Image 1 (tube, helix red, strand yellow):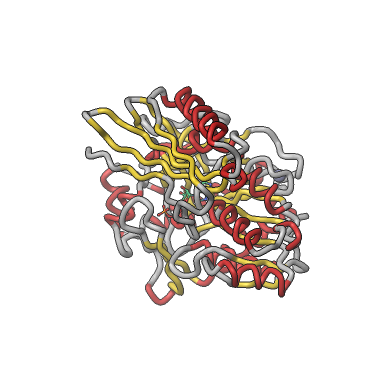
Image 2 (cartoon, rainbow, N blue to C red; image 1 turned 60 degrees about the vertical axis):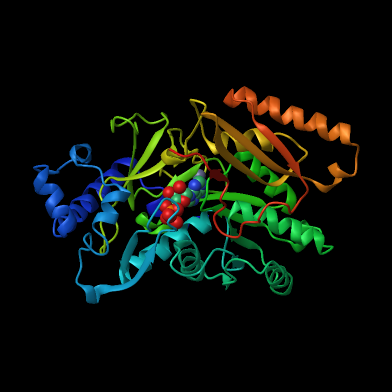
Length: 431
Ligand code: ADP
Ligand code: ZN
C-alpha cells in the first residue's frame, strides 16, 4: 500500500535529479544562516558551484557540537515569524539541541509519517495509541500528526501510567502502537500481571524506535504481544521519527531519500564508504525551510542495504542501528557495543525483559557487571539450575568481551523499568 506511489517508487535517476534540485535550494538557504555563512567562508565553499550530487562530499560535516555552538538559532534560515514550533533532542549525550519548523515543515513531516505508517499496512481504519513522550521530544507529536494525516483514530496516551494504557487499549480497540522497545517488554509484564494474555488485546502492529535494540528484542516483543514489529528510525536534528521506516517486509528501513541524502562514512577518517559497508550514517536534510542541516554526523552506525526491496519502493534501506559511535564501550581494551551484549542475552531463552550493564574499575582493571532479569518460573526451580544458567551467561559473554564478567540473575521487576529511552549502561569508571 502506498501513500504516494509516484514518489515512493520513483526511478533512481528521477530521484537523484529531484535530490539535486532540493539540495541546491537547501544549500542556498543554509548559506544565509550565521553558522553556515562562516563555515562555508572558512572552507572556501561556494554553494553555487555544487552542481552534482557528488560534489556534496566536498562540503564540511556538521556535528552535534556545531549545533550546540550555534544554539539557539544560528542555523535558522527563515524570519522568526515563519517559525511555528520547536523541538529538542532527548539530550542522551549532553545538552539537548533545538530544532525549528515552519508550518510547511510540519505539514511535510506529517506527510512523511503518513507515508511510513501506510508502508506497514496501517490505514484510516486503525486505532493508533502513541506511547511516546509528548512535549519537546519529537517521538510524541511527530507520529501524532502523521497518524492524524493518515486518518487513524489517535490516542495520545504518551508515556507511563501502564494501567491507563491497558485500559485505553481495551476500551478503544487499539490496533497499532508506537512505543520504545524497553517499555513494550515492561508493559507486556504488567498486562500479564493483570490477568490478561497480551495477544488477547488484539494489537496488530508496533512501531519500535528511539533507542537501539537487537533483533532478539524485536522477536521477543512480537512473541509476547502476538504482533508485527516495525523498526522506526529518526533523530530530532532530521525532524524526528520518519527518517527511515520498515515496510511490510520488515527487512531493513527505507530511508526517505526525497527528504534526506544519506552517506555512510568511516567514523575515524570521515571518508565515504560504498553501499553495503558499515559505518556512520551522515544525513543532509533537503526538505526543511526553517533549518537546513548539511552532512550531519548522526553518530549512528549502520549500513546501506543495496538490494532492491520486494515492496517496489526505490528508496534504499538501512540496516538496524548497531549503536552510536559514542556508545562503544572499551572494556579491558576490547571494543564492545551494548547491542552485542544484548544479543548474547536475548539468545538465552530464560532471560526476561530487562538488563543493565555496570562498569567500574578496580586496581586499574575494568570490571563489567551484567544484571539480568529472568522469567519468574526460573526462581521456582532449584538453585543448581540457576547457577548453571549463570555460568552459561558468563561463558557466552566472556567469549565476546574476553574480560570475566560478573553476572547477577534477578527476579522480574528488580531493575527500574523504563518508560522512555532505556538507560542500559552505567559507567562508574573514572577517566
Ligand atoms: P538524542 O540524540 O539526545 O538521544 P533524539 O531524541 O533526537 O536525541 O534521538 C535520536 C537518536 O535515537 C538517534 O540518533 C539514534 O541514536 C536513536 N534511535 C532512534 N530510533 C532508533 C532506532 N529505531 N534504532 C536505534 N536507535 C534509534
Ligand atoms: Zn520495502
